[in-house]
Image (cartoon, rainbow over the protein chains, first blue to last red):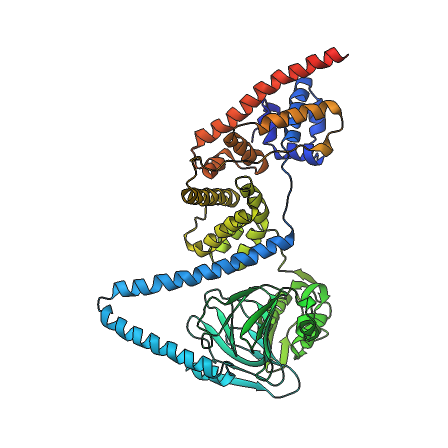
Amino acid sequence: MQHRNNYTEIEHFLADESFRLWVCFKDDQQEWEEWTLENSSRAKLVEEARLWLLAMKVPADKLAADDVQHALEATWEKIERAEENKKDTEKPVLKLLRKKWFNGVAAVLILSLLSGWLYNQSTSSENSALSYSELINENEEGLVEQTNNSDKPQIITLSDGSSVLLQPNSKLSYPKIFVGNERKVYLSGEGFFEISKDPKKPFFVFANEIVTKVVGTSFKIKAYANQPNVEVVVRTGKVKVRSNELISNTKDELIVLLPNQALRFVRKNLSFNKITDITQDESLSRSTSNIEQLGFEFTDIPVAQIFKTIEQAYLVKIDFPQTKLKDCYLTTSLSDQPLPEKLKIICKSLGNNTSYEMNGNQIIIISDGCN
Amino acid sequence: MKKQLLHTEILEDSTLWNSLKEGNENAFSILFKRHYSHLVRYGNSFLPFPEKVQDCVQDVFTDIWIYRDKLSDKVVVKAYLLACVRKRITRSQERDRIFRLSTSIDTVEFLFDFSIEHNLISDETTASKVSHLNHLINDLPSRQKEALYLRYSQELTVDQIADTLDINYQSANNLLHRALLSLRKEWKGNIFLILVLFSFAF
């Protein structure tokens, strides 16, 4: 931009942001007032440019934050639909073109599709409610099962660094190590999930009739076999929920949930209910657990207190050298992180000589103090 | 000893754009929230159907996400988005026209009207001058008006205006230049007129 002393046309002024700020918002950081008064021919040009700006107002009709939020949700749903369509149209064509012997295959394919469809039809008419054991049987990979028979929530750490807080009378099945391009776990009962971010490997939770897909976020699922509803409540990030293909052959029932939204699946009639504000829903707001209420935004907080918050949230026990860490304060945001990630961040910010060990519900911090 | 980390900062459009290209959903959401309002307003100046406009803007974002692998990383995000919205609306209009067999074959027309900053005007002389100028601006051919809007309200460069309107640099420059030139001509004449009228009044 040229220097304003060389401005000869109105448009030079119009294009100058500081000039616009001065005229429209009386924000005169560049001392336009003084500069204008220095010279009378300059003043005339400035006055004219000012009139132009006054005559070219664009109304600031900003949409309400709510409306933008709704639009964003609508867009994510459009994206979901478009991605499904893309998958459906691209793949078969490519495969068929590549292989010349597809005639024979097609016949087999159609037969197997037909029998698959018939199978689905029969299973869905017989027992519409999917059970946890049926889901587990669907998965052939070796799974580890953890059951919480105690009266307190239990923390489970998965091989990808995600953590799950499993409530009493609940069980979770998961592979010892995640392989392939998907991470799949199976839940019966209630669990609070904090998933480590990995866009290339989406994380799926199969819980009775619904499948929840995320890439990195935190949310709660409540799917007890003996209760009428299945619920998903989102804390951070974005979560997609659809019904399990085994009970419905319609794929388009896909719902996108954003923070503080929830979904209730009514088993009786296999229908989805989206709850856009969880604080308005009585039964949901009553049943929030510790971890959902506790904040993990810390500003200048003694590290001992941060450990205490984690102990309360995950019902773990943390041992740390109290005297060495007594003058350590942290400012950090840990809301969107699974437990191992939270510990890692704290250790890293305390200094290189700090590390942690985790053994079930027992966590030990090893440190020489903060730097 | 204290330590700061993970501070949320205001990220540049271009930074967000690049993480969007890598599949970051959060970056997508931030860009969406940042630009949605003004894109809808721009769209509304072509189409008097707000719902249809919102639909078009959402479709633009949908395509951006779906084809994020193919996006160029050297774009000015705002200009790119404005251009996409404009194209999308033009295309939807053309489709409608085929179905309705309408006679008009023009591309979309910029129907937006500038208004007046009333709260910054204290005296009557200024008020009458400004209101006159406002009329002159709003009576400009729609393309010229759109160029002025993009230049001074959306703060695009001439290059970016050319991209948005799908014309070359010279044409964009001419549009702006002609707009200002004809305004100034009218305006100069009118200032004279106003002055004459005033001298009569006293």
